[in-house]
Image (cartoon, rainbow, N blue to C red; front, side, top):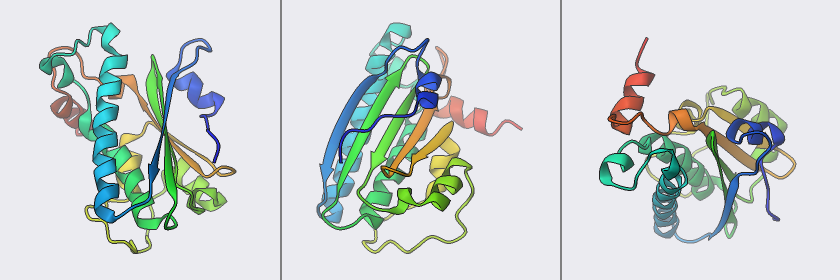
Length: 196
């Protein structure tokens, strides 16, 4: 699999006036369940730090109070469920290629797991329209804590699937990633979700 990039529509959502995002790709090998779940945790922690560093010029210093403004749970939900999909359903000996695209207005995550799930037109339609899955195949490798696409739907501002390459893209806008000064991210974003 060669490198992939989000559509122009996504780039317009996360970037200003045609500028290019900061891009980073990582490749993860297939291994034991424990190894792959460990990679998921490492990747997630690395993404937290990358987002904090990327937005530091917008008044987010690198002290503990400022780090607490990040929506850690929302980021973790999208990344964890995408990794779990690979762990549970991708072909054995596949690799997971991730793309992280950082722009001034938001972040996009790309996931290519080597399987055929994201190449199916009906799956593209279902994911992009956030249609709930009524039935999901049992995880053959039995990873724990699987919540399915509900977490991805809830914490992604936009989802796009490149069904030609089999890539899932999830966008989170900056306004939904970083709480205002003086607010704690986890509490602030939880309150926003529960306002009727």
